[in-house]
Every structure is written in C-alpha cells, then in structure tokens.
Image (cartoon, rainbow, N blue to C red; front, top):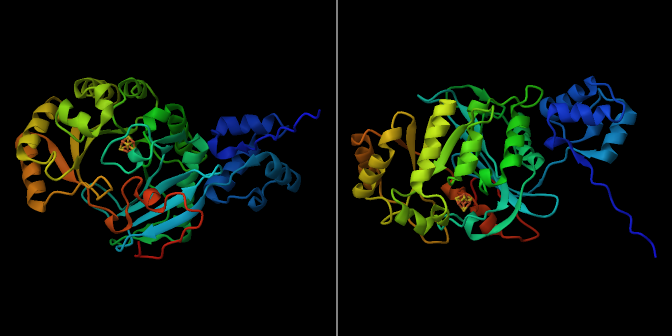
Length: 381
Ligand code: SF4
C-alpha cells in the first residue's frame, strides 16, 4: 500500500508581518535585507509575481515561486457606480469561496482631504444573521486568513496605482488612504486574523496605513471589544446598533440576545476610556420599523452618556431580498433633528453605489456561485 504524497501549501507572504517574513527567509539562509526587498516588491512596486522583483537573485525568485505565494484572489464580477466613485468587486479565493470588496472615493470635505477607502471582507458568509443584510442570509462559510484580508487591499492598491482618481479639488488619489472592516462577515468573530491584517497593513515596510485611518465594525461582541481596547493599535470602532432598545434590536439582530445593548455600551465606554477614540454607531434606517421620532428620542437618551465621544451614522437601507425600504428624506431629517435636540451628533451616510448593489453581500447574492460571471462595465449593474 502506498502512502499518499502530502502536498505542502506554499507560505502566504501576504499573511506575514515583516518580522515573520524576515524569520522565514532567515530559516532558509537568506540575509535580513531580503525581507525588505520582498516588501518593496509586494507593497511598493505592487507586483504579484516574484519574477517581477529584479532585486532578488534568480535562484531565490525561483525558490520563492515554489515555496511561497503573493497571489491574491481573482475577479469574478465588478461594477462601477454611475458617478464612478464606488467600485465593487466580487473576488474568488483559492478554494472557490466568494467575497466582496468595495472601493469608495470621497472628495475633500469638512472632515478632511479626498480619500480612497477600501471596505474589506473578513469572512466568507456570516454567522450572525442580521435580517437586513444580504450576507447574513447566506450563513457562515469560513474565516478569511490575514493574507486574504491583506490581498483585498493590495488588489485595490494596484487598481488605484493603474488608474488614479482625480478628485474634484484636483488632488490625485493613487493609493489606499483608509480602510474599513465592514464587508462580508463580523471582523471580531475572526479576531486573530483581523488583528494580524491590521498589523500587516499598518507596518512601515508595507502599505503603512495608519491605525487611525482604519475602522473596525462589530455587531457588539463584548469580550472582543474589551480585548481590542487593550491592543496597541488605536483603530476606530463602529458599532452596528440599528435599534434603540433590545426588543426591537433582537428582531433584526439575533446577537442582541447574547449581548444586550447595555453591555455593549459598557464595553464601548471602556474602549473610549482606554483609547480616547470616538466611536461611531451605525444605524440602518428601515422605513416604518425604526425610523420614527419616538425611536430617535429613545436613541438619543440611550447614547446621551456617550454623546461627547459617540456619533451616529444613519444609513438608509439598500433594498435587499428581505424587502425593507429606505425612509423618505423628510423622515430622515426629522430623525436627525431629534437626535440633535437630544445632544447626539449624526450624519447620513451617502447612499453609495445603490445602482450596483453596493451593500454588503448584495453582489454575491446577485451572482451566487455561478461559474461564469460578467465583468460589468462602467455604470451598468
Ligand atoms: S450586518 Fe454584519 S454581522 Fe450582521 S449578518 Fe451582515 S455581515 Fe454579519
């Protein structure tokens, strides 16, 4: 009887910190400066093939091609919004799982300079089943590795390098400036890989994206929020709240039964005390469900103790299979005014890319697991 040959998986360099990369190379007799050269190739020249790293000797390039990988996912579908400022990609990972990554381009505003924000996925599917979310209806498939999270950002970094965006103020945006962990999946459910991806994307030898330019979104996993408060990276925290009380929240977000709002807010207070960072509360507005003036009053009372450090981001729902509808402009204005009167600041997230199904999980839902998908042209959906 023959023993089957076990294939050795190539090392995913996109999932290694600089120190890990240096150690991996050192274990194979390579000097420390090779790690810097590999990082230059991956994160500065933005190549996805060792053969395109001329600083490395040919023998090392060949060895790396056999024993390591820097190849990211492949595009299965792509769509660009009519205004050209939102680009959504359906990417396929090595095992065939499909995830979504979104690039959002923002002109300069009172909040700062023009920016290119990448929204990355941290899981294929999601275990939390929020009723308004297309990903939540798919169920959980698996956690993404740190390398797979980094690869999404690199993919967009290459796109921006090849096709820089000229913002309305004339500035040229040719790199990723901000990252939001708000794509498919719950980032803090995949804690270790999300944190490692943050470390890799933050490292000076890599893309060097500041932790303060990164936002991690969560449905409110209390132990993970408390753990995050102790990490060296002071990332922004966004809490998906979406309702002003537990009974209502539990109807759309089953996780509420495990972590009630009061416990989540206590953990948020700890996060603020430890990091000094402002926390955003995401509130998807569902017409006729959670958008009345009464709900706004209740929300303002709930968040009043955090008002100085808390900000509400109102998001009119994108239309999903669940049949929710966004409220009217007048309803949204009344909601905001009530929050303001209660001492809570808010903004309305511009509905980005509605014409291309930009909300989390919608592109994947639309195209399912079809083997052959169109690369959608500019403005089509
Ligand atoms: S909103 Fe986030 S946590 Fe809820 S189901 Fe969707 S991806 Fe999961």
